[in-house]
Length: 163
Image 1 (cartoon, rainbow, N blue to C red):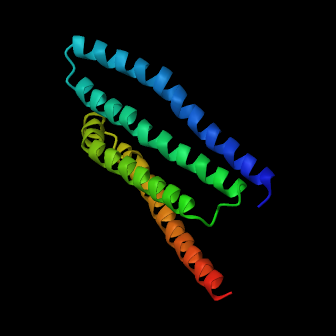
Image 2 (cartoon, one colour; image 1 turned 135 degrees about the vertical axis):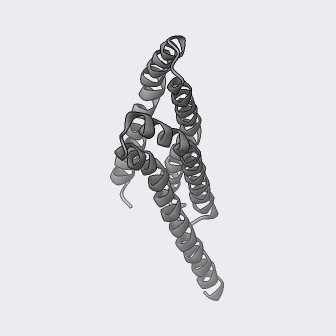
Protein backbone atom coordinates (compact mmCIF):
# COMPACT_ATOMS: atom_id res chain seq x y z
CA UNK A 1 0.00 0.00 0.00
CA UNK A 2 1.29 3.42 -0.84
CA UNK A 3 2.37 5.59 2.03
CA UNK A 4 0.23 8.47 0.73
CA UNK A 5 -2.98 6.57 1.40
CA UNK A 6 -1.97 5.76 4.97
CA UNK A 7 -1.05 9.39 5.52
CA UNK A 8 -4.54 10.33 4.34
CA UNK A 9 -6.06 7.77 6.71
CA UNK A 10 -3.91 8.97 9.61
CA UNK A 11 -5.09 12.50 8.91
CA UNK A 12 -8.68 11.24 8.86
CA UNK A 13 -8.16 9.56 12.26
CA UNK A 14 -6.81 12.79 13.70
CA UNK A 15 -9.66 14.80 12.18
CA UNK A 16 -12.16 12.39 13.74
CA UNK A 17 -10.74 13.06 17.17
CA UNK A 18 -10.74 16.87 16.99
CA UNK A 19 -14.54 17.43 16.99
CA UNK A 20 -15.03 15.03 19.89
CA UNK A 21 -12.32 16.81 21.85
CA UNK A 22 -13.89 20.19 21.08
CA UNK A 23 -17.28 18.88 22.17
CA UNK A 24 -15.84 17.57 25.46
CA UNK A 25 -14.04 20.85 26.16
CA UNK A 26 -16.60 23.41 25.02
CA UNK A 27 -20.10 22.04 24.41
CA UNK A 28 -20.62 19.51 27.19
CA UNK A 29 -19.54 21.87 30.01
CA UNK A 30 -21.92 24.50 28.63
CA UNK A 31 -24.78 21.98 28.70
CA UNK A 32 -23.79 20.98 32.24
CA UNK A 33 -23.93 24.64 33.30
CA UNK A 34 -27.42 24.99 31.87
CA UNK A 35 -28.47 21.78 33.63
CA UNK A 36 -27.15 23.18 36.90
CA UNK A 37 -29.27 26.30 36.41
CA UNK A 38 -32.28 24.08 35.69
CA UNK A 39 -31.72 22.18 38.94
CA UNK A 40 -31.64 25.46 40.84
CA UNK A 41 -34.99 26.34 39.27
CA UNK A 42 -36.42 23.00 40.39
CA UNK A 43 -36.36 20.97 37.17
CA UNK A 44 -35.95 17.24 37.69
CA UNK A 45 -35.09 16.72 34.01
CA UNK A 46 -31.64 18.20 34.62
CA UNK A 47 -30.59 15.00 36.40
CA UNK A 48 -31.37 13.11 33.21
CA UNK A 49 -29.12 15.53 31.32
CA UNK A 50 -26.33 14.86 33.83
CA UNK A 51 -26.70 11.13 33.21
CA UNK A 52 -26.36 11.63 29.46
CA UNK A 53 -23.39 13.95 29.90
CA UNK A 54 -21.68 11.39 32.12
CA UNK A 55 -22.10 8.70 29.47
CA UNK A 56 -20.79 11.06 26.79
CA UNK A 57 -17.68 11.91 28.78
CA UNK A 58 -17.00 8.28 29.70
CA UNK A 59 -17.49 7.11 26.11
CA UNK A 60 -14.84 9.57 24.92
CA UNK A 61 -12.19 7.46 26.68
CA UNK A 62 -12.67 4.23 24.69
CA UNK A 63 -13.24 6.34 21.57
CA UNK A 64 -9.75 7.83 21.85
CA UNK A 65 -8.25 4.44 22.69
CA UNK A 66 -9.84 3.06 19.51
CA UNK A 67 -8.48 5.97 17.50
CA UNK A 68 -5.03 5.30 18.95
CA UNK A 69 -5.28 1.62 17.97
CA UNK A 70 -6.35 2.68 14.47
CA UNK A 71 -3.30 4.93 14.25
CA UNK A 72 -1.08 2.04 15.39
CA UNK A 73 -2.66 -0.23 12.78
CA UNK A 74 -1.85 2.30 10.08
CA UNK A 75 1.73 2.46 11.36
CA UNK A 76 1.94 -1.33 11.11
CA UNK A 77 0.77 -1.09 7.52
CA UNK A 78 3.48 1.50 6.82
CA UNK A 79 6.13 -0.82 8.30
CA UNK A 80 4.88 -3.78 6.21
CA UNK A 81 3.57 -5.49 9.34
CA UNK A 82 -0.05 -5.53 8.17
CA UNK A 83 -0.13 -9.34 8.28
CA UNK A 84 1.13 -9.73 11.82
CA UNK A 85 -0.22 -10.53 15.25
CA UNK A 86 0.21 -6.85 16.12
CA UNK A 87 -2.48 -5.94 13.61
CA UNK A 88 -4.77 -8.69 14.90
CA UNK A 89 -4.36 -7.39 18.45
CA UNK A 90 -5.07 -3.82 17.36
CA UNK A 91 -8.26 -4.93 15.60
CA UNK A 92 -9.30 -6.91 18.67
CA UNK A 93 -8.85 -3.84 20.86
CA UNK A 94 -10.79 -1.68 18.40
CA UNK A 95 -13.60 -4.24 18.52
CA UNK A 96 -13.57 -4.23 22.31
CA UNK A 97 -13.65 -0.44 22.53
CA UNK A 98 -16.52 -0.27 20.05
CA UNK A 99 -18.50 -2.77 22.14
CA UNK A 100 -17.81 -0.71 25.26
CA UNK A 101 -19.04 2.45 23.55
CA UNK A 102 -22.15 0.64 22.34
CA UNK A 103 -22.80 -0.65 25.85
CA UNK A 104 -22.41 2.80 27.36
CA UNK A 105 -24.90 4.34 24.97
CA UNK A 106 -27.27 1.42 25.51
CA UNK A 107 -27.14 2.22 29.23
CA UNK A 108 -27.97 5.85 28.34
CA UNK A 109 -31.06 4.93 26.33
CA UNK A 110 -33.44 5.13 29.35
CA UNK A 111 -32.33 8.74 29.83
CA UNK A 112 -33.10 9.40 26.18
CA UNK A 113 -36.52 7.79 26.60
CA UNK A 114 -37.26 10.06 29.55
CA UNK A 115 -36.21 13.15 27.63
CA UNK A 116 -38.25 12.06 24.60
CA UNK A 117 -41.31 11.55 26.79
CA UNK A 118 -41.00 14.92 28.50
CA UNK A 119 -40.34 16.80 25.25
CA UNK A 120 -42.89 14.71 23.34
CA UNK A 121 -40.28 13.95 20.69
CA UNK A 122 -40.35 10.27 19.70
CA UNK A 123 -37.67 10.87 17.04
CA UNK A 124 -35.22 11.53 19.86
CA UNK A 125 -35.29 7.83 20.70
CA UNK A 126 -34.16 6.94 17.17
CA UNK A 127 -31.39 9.53 17.38
CA UNK A 128 -30.36 8.05 20.73
CA UNK A 129 -30.07 4.61 19.16
CA UNK A 130 -27.70 5.77 16.40
CA UNK A 131 -24.50 5.64 18.52
CA UNK A 132 -25.43 2.18 19.80
CA UNK A 133 -25.86 0.70 16.34
CA UNK A 134 -23.02 2.67 14.74
CA UNK A 135 -20.51 1.39 17.26
CA UNK A 136 -21.92 -2.13 16.94
CA UNK A 137 -21.37 -1.97 13.18
CA UNK A 138 -17.78 -0.89 13.80
CA UNK A 139 -17.32 -3.75 16.28
CA UNK A 140 -18.67 -6.33 13.82
CA UNK A 141 -16.53 -4.91 11.01
CA UNK A 142 -13.42 -5.04 13.21
CA UNK A 143 -14.27 -8.62 14.23
CA UNK A 144 -14.62 -9.69 10.59
CA UNK A 145 -11.33 -8.00 9.66
CA UNK A 146 -9.65 -9.56 12.67
CA UNK A 147 -10.83 -13.03 11.68
CA UNK A 148 -9.83 -12.59 8.03
CA UNK A 149 -6.44 -11.25 9.00
CA UNK A 150 -5.85 -14.12 11.42
CA UNK A 151 -6.77 -16.64 8.71
CA UNK A 152 -4.46 -14.88 6.22
CA UNK A 153 -1.62 -15.00 8.75
CA UNK A 154 -2.25 -18.70 9.35
CA UNK A 155 -2.22 -19.40 5.61
CA UNK A 156 0.96 -17.36 5.19
CA UNK A 157 2.69 -19.24 8.02
CA UNK A 158 1.57 -22.56 6.56
CA UNK A 159 2.95 -21.60 3.15
CA UNK A 160 6.22 -20.46 4.71
CA UNK A 161 6.61 -23.90 6.32
CA UNK A 162 5.92 -25.68 3.03
CA UNK A 163 8.52 -23.71 1.08
